[in-house]
Image (cartoon, rainbow, N blue to C red; front, side):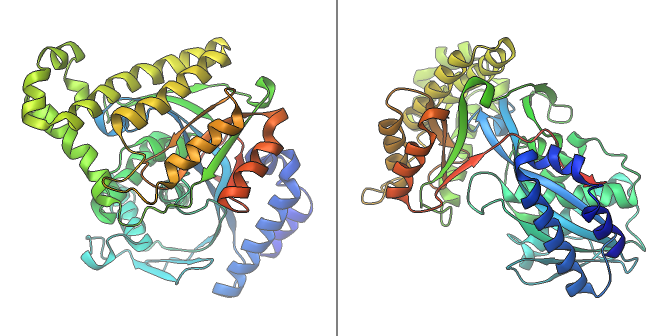
Length: 424
């Protein structure tokens, strides 16, 4: 720890830390680095040799479009998982993560384990397995890592994608000379989550975390998605980005998420296709009576959302590129309405007494008074809401939201220009 700690104290990491966390957060960044280095020494009895970081992400546009090979707009944020790391050559990845049981994954056995599904160990094993398949040598490798995170679980900022990207970045840098591109690291993370963790996620979360900044992504070809960086300075436009914790968790909502993909598959089966990107919208509309009969009205409405949301994600990117922030906000509001009315991922089916997400959206709209924009954030049904808030309203907005939802429920996040990386 001494050499790395000395570099930290001497300010030799400051330029990188400013890029990751912003200049105003430098003191906090120093404190977190010191904490994770001390945690590593306590866990493993030796100094850490390096630091790694992978950010959470926010979905700016394209709600539930990535799994249909659609278009999205996403951004890395300044909340991350930070890791102190050393290679150990033991053939084992050992991880100590603040607030969680220690994990040890033997790299000699990279087959999926049923008992690990839904756990961080499954993600580690899945990332290592996929990298091994691609040619990264896992024999006689291994590493020790101590992790701390300020990406809130269930926040819609995708702590799981950040974890996958972190593990993939560490293995790529330490054992494969950094051969993988950020998009390839994202695909490795998605593989681990799909095959080992057991969640049929798309590729947006991992791509945003791996690439960094604001990115417009077209998933028409999932092997080679088109990723376009877009410059965005929210403060220059007079806005802050807030993520609101509705108080409704994601537990027991797997069936709700699965219903979206299953119903869209039912629509696609009417055309002998696998995803909506393969079904022209004109063909869908022409066959709507048949689709309704075969898949149901909710499935048809959800398909209408996906078609419209793909157009919006492209238009949002175009608005940002041209500097038309008001048009971007209009499209965000439209996206929120479509998610609520057509995609219907705000209130779990049959739920009447507790509708935290819808209430949070309604409260945001009341406090914004027609300004800014608000929409569901991420998967929906529970979790979080996204709001673009004029800077002059930020304090009153945060106070009003937290008076109802509780202290700390309003997270003001900033866009981070750097994806998963080794801090040097």
